[in-house]
Amino acid sequence: MTKNLFYKKENAWKGYSEKEKKVVMNYAEQYKAFLQICRTERITVQYMKNESKKHSFGKGKKFVINNSNKAVALVSLGTISPLKGIKFVGSHIDVPRIDVKQNPLYEKFDLAQLKTHYYGGIKKYQWFNRPLGIFGVILTRTGKKIEVRIGEKDSDPVFVISDLLPHLSKDQGGKTVSKAFDGEKLNVIFGSIPLSGKEKDSIKANILNILNKKYGIIEEDFISAELEVVPIDKVRDIGMDRGLIGGYGHDDRVCSYASATALFDSKNKYTAVSVMFDKEETGSDGKTGANGRFIEDVIIEILEKSNIKPTFANVRKVMNNSEMLSADVSCGVNPDYPEVHDIKNAAIIGNGIAIVKFAGSRGKAGTNDANAEFVNKIRNIFNKSGVVWQSAELGKVDQGGGGTIAKFMAQHGIDVLDCGPALLGMHSPFEIVSKADLYETYKAYREFFISM
Ligand code: MN
Ligand code: MN
Image 1 (cartoon, rainbow, N blue to C red):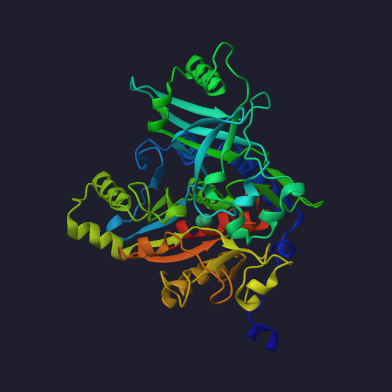
Image 2 (cartoon, protein in one colour; image 1 turned 180 degrees about the vertical axis):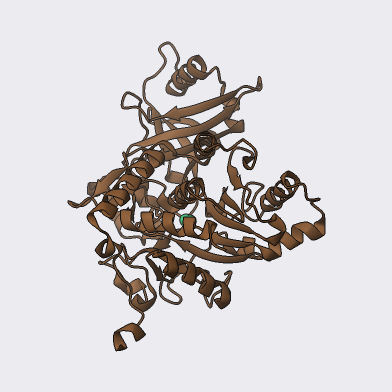
């Protein structure tokens, strides 16, 4: 009797039968294959377009809305009018990384390097002396669009940001971590062989020659390029029991993948949308970010496809009746650093999808803070369908904080709740997620899509 009065988290693995464990492991394999390919937001949009086609998107009641190849919405119209509300699961497909600057190439001490400007919140030292790839697009002076993907194949070259050796790090070691690594020194080694017969900048000249032969570009073309320097390590199982997955970009492609596959597997009565934004890691600004107008465009297209006039009143009606799970990762307790959490309100790895009522920092500033009514509705959906979930907060009060797309969606009048799996090593080049949490996240989004 008293046992039932206590709120208790539980490890999802404990509740699985042998058969269910296999399903969880199989789902993880498919996710790993996705994560291995999708190293940028552009590649992820392309992947989603291709994958949704296989699930009859592009025909009739199922369609894809593309925003500049960097944000995307997968829409499955229901039998109930969209005016009664839409079930959104909103995630983001941009990931912290290191962007190449617009005039990047220089030569110094017989090395050619690319200057960079990091994107999103990174701990800079984690990016040194590890193999990195370069992915993105270059728009040339002739209007051609070149797709760059270097580092994927074992035969490709890789790139590296080199740190100082410990032998000469007395000055660096005496600084605080935030001061020890200078953003302007995150430069990527790009070449080392001089062009014969040239005196000045001969290594840079050789590189420009190679680029011109391979892509037909000149130095000025970098100015209209988006090149992202990202880890190219293989996505791998972690632990002797293979319960965890290590890889680059779980935040937040894990939620994008879970929401897309959940949508593919849903027979939804309400219109269901998996929407994937860009620019979350830099504050959701820009036309592909959640603070832009893309969500309105999505609703207008849904109304038009449903033969309902997208008047201002109708768009507002849809928004006020809609619900969204802001699908983003949370932070799991690292056993070596429990002191940054209020353990009673922290996510434990393997204990299911984490519901986060509020994010933000310093007295809940900059947060959506979901209504208790909506939290209750979602909790009951999860409980009824056997989704393993836990309530969580990012960290201790005043220890730090973070934001998601939730507040930008809520300002439209949509009921929004943050929920996603908890990670270890978030924003590092090799983030960690539990396969059980991944699967419970998929289940949670699926149950939400078909909920009434
Ligand atoms: Mn995120
Ligand atoms: Mn993030």
